[in-house]
Amino acid sequence: MAFDSLSEKLQNVFKGLRSKGRLSEEDVRLALREVKLALLEADVNFKVVKQFVKDVEERAIGQDVMNGLNPGQMVIKIVNEEMIRLMGSETTEIALQPGKALTVIMMAGLQGAGKTTTAAKLAGKFKAKGRKVLLVACDVYRPAAIEQLRINGEKQGVEVFAMGEKQNPVDIAKAAREHAEKQECNVMILDTAGRLHVDEDMMVELVRIKNHVTVHQTVLVVDSMTGQDAVNVAQTFEKRVGIDGVILTKLDGDTRGGAALSIRAVTGKPIFYAGMGEKLSDLEQFYPDRMASRILGMGDVLTLIEKAQEEIDEDQARKLEEKMRKNEFDFEMYLESMSQMKKMGGFSSILGMLPGLGGSGAGALPDIDEGQAEKSLSRAEAIIYSMTPQERRNPGLLNPGRKRRIAQGAGVDIAEVNRLVKQFEQMKKMMKQMPGMMKRGRRGGIFKGLPF
Image 1 (tube, helix red, strand yellow):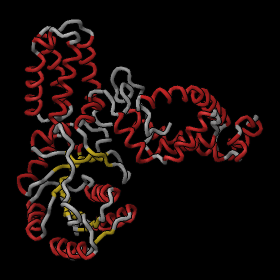
Image 2 (cartoon, one colour):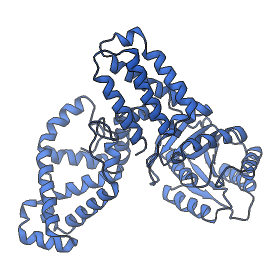
Image 3 (cartoon, one colour):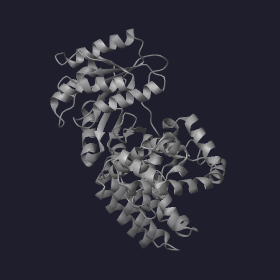
Image 4 (spheres, helix red, strand yellow):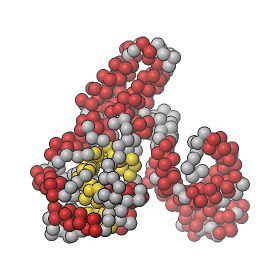
């Protein structure tokens, strides 16, 4: 997950601050020197780092903080607030035209940033909000781009307008607008061509499209893995074409995260969304406060709950809860719970949003290899599918002979079957305690919308 290294370094700095009963000005300055180094290593723009540290220091070295009951905690609170301010304080939506009027959104960015996939992801978001969306294939230079958009549009249930590779992108955009109005679409997303680096032809083409078609929102797609370079790209696009905001892609990857912390401060433009995976549903609204929370190792329970509400079938979740209350947990439910977890992005995605468990800082769980976890889940599924329906519903039937047959059917060693049965029994014991926990949790609204 992005920011793991930064989170670990910051949490170590904060651990040192918390351990001191009182703080001297020198303590704060030494801690902020470490914060500064951590941010620079995360590829945050050096001017942004300099201003950030100055702002935190001015607020932290004051009578209220230094003589407070918990000065270490106060400094952490200030760092959190300044980090939120750095990323834009408020969540910004892509502005749509009022009523049923057509909104034209132009996607821009370099080749390889994930622009075409992001256009389809965005189309899915608007469709889910009740908008009639048209995707437009304006990238006539990359042969696979039109087909990629068509396939992804189909998956999202969104129409794709294409005129082939031999047409001028400006003509395609103009024809698409006419088509969108005839079909009463109210959102039109233009997937434009990218280049491997910023060049004159690309800029001229984008400006020409804007000159011939009214573009209401220009959204720049940048690869967060390129760090400081992503900020430079954003600056250039803003100067030459004009942008309204940014979508950061690959924020789930092994990236230092500097782009997320620098773009708003350097360009003055908001981050609309963050791409958190390859699936077409892996596009998250960018909340500066939640992102700061994740970076500082405080988790992001709100996003986890929203993810659960989007991905989990309420009826299935209710049935699961009822069976747990009655202590009727069986292998069919075990399968169901694995399926729900997959929908939510897997173990590491969920742990990364839980306070104190994600990342690499103090209190974090050991790193989970997502590939390894996927393989383990697949093997567990194969074992359960090799059981008869009666065995799944009544695990007590599993004697050594049946286990041998199941192992053979799943193509695994019998030791793996025994391991799964043991894990299942442990989970069942834990489930006995869950109704009480859930009662307390629901009273506080903690587990609302989660699949357990």
